[in-house]
Image 1 (cartoon, rainbow, N blue to C red):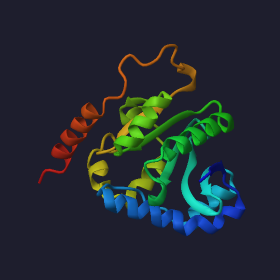
Image 2: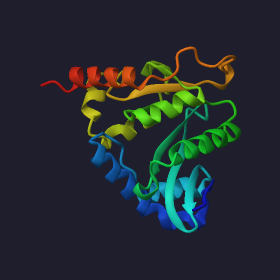
Image 3: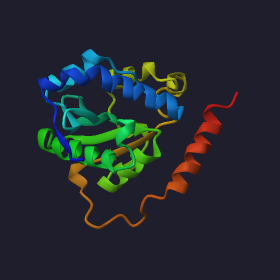
Image 4: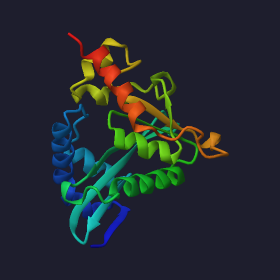
Length: 205
C-alpha cells in the first residue's frame, strides 16, 4: 500500500461527497461537535488549490483544506480527516504536515491557527510548533466564527461571546519560530484533564 498526499485539483472533485460524509460520521462517532461542510464548499477549496488529499491509488484515504482570514493575516487548517480504513497508520500527521508546509509557502506572512476538541489533533499541532492561546489571539473575522454555527457546541461559544468554548485555540506564528525544542512536550493526560474540566463547566445543567 502506497498512499500519496498531493495538492488537490479539480480531478479530485469526485471525492467531495465522500469527504463530507467521512467528516460527519467521524464527529458523530467521537461524540464531538464539528462545523458541517458541503460538497460544494469542498469543491471550491479544491478549485482554489487550498486543499490536500491522500489517495491509495484512486481510493480516498484522507483530506484537509486551508482557510484564510483577514486578508491573509490568518490561515487555518480545517476538515482534517482520515478514512476509517486508513487510521492508525500515522496518516493524519502526514496530511497535517503537508498542508502546514504548503500553507506556509502559499501564505508566508500568515499566522496559522486552529480550534479543536481532538486530542490527537492537539498533539500534531503541538509537534509542529503551535502554542495554546486564548481565542482573543485568533482571527476576529466574524465569518470564521459564523462557520461554527452548525457545531453542536455553538450555543456555548455564543454564550461566551466567542471568547471560549470546548475547543482549544492553538496558534503558530512564523515570526516567532522556536529556537529550541519545546521544554514541556505535549502531555495527553494533562490535556485530557483540561478537556474534562471544560466539559464539566460548560455542559453542566
